[in-house]
Length: 254
Ligand SMILES: Nc1ncnc2c1ncn2[C@@H]1O[C@H](COP(=O)(O)OP(=O)(O)OP(=O)(O)O)[C@@H](O)[C@H]1O
Image (tube, rainbow, N blue to C red; front, side):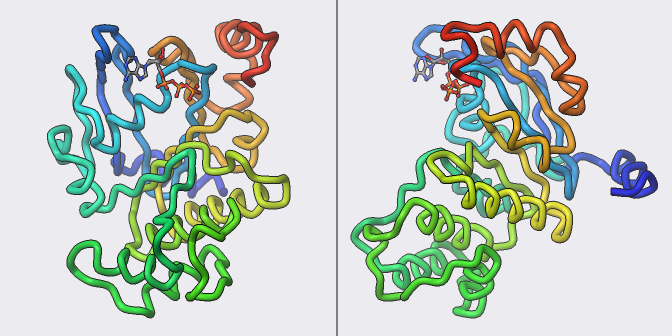
């Protein structure tokens, strides 16, 4: 990206943000005051060792869990009290670590269900648009249960993208994929952010995957943000080394 595009982006208001999020689960304090923001077309990577609180944070951002305090905003509006489906309707898209497809449906039926999940109902052209974006080329009569991991991910992404969400929360979108498929997901993320101006917050375990896609990286450990900045900056940070590379298992979680 050019320096002028960078400057223009940094002066834009955040599209999606959270401030000072605190969350308790099972009587334990899990998130201790997390804040983040992302602008249109920007990719924010979230990393951290196992149990850092990344998925819990996503549950709060997407509306599955209500925080004890703090707020979540979309286009400047407070959406903290809106449930998951209401946020989805506003355009907050979420993907999950495990691509769970509706096993009893075919690909075509899944697209139809997604088109008619809520109003405005979408057309077949919208579904085709979603499928084209992710390069999903499967028979509509194929049962979703028979799809391999990559095509499951593509189907779920196509169903999300046909609604043209301005923000995507992606929880380890490359989990369980082989290298060539990871490259394809990388390419899609770059295209969505840089060509279609979608804001993306992405949880990723493998730091090397963030190198090509993330504009900024935020590192979590034990429910707090311990560093944020460019990937190069955070890799220099001793706190990040201690938490991420010198944890139990000699960095096995990195
Ligand atoms: N329902 C729950 N009740 C109690 N504690 C929970 C619950 N869900 C998660 N936790 C705890 O919250 C902490 C953060 O978990 P979380 O899954 O958010 O971390 P994570 O960074 O996503 O980890 P991973 O990389 O392993 O997915 C962990 O200590 C976990 O044991």
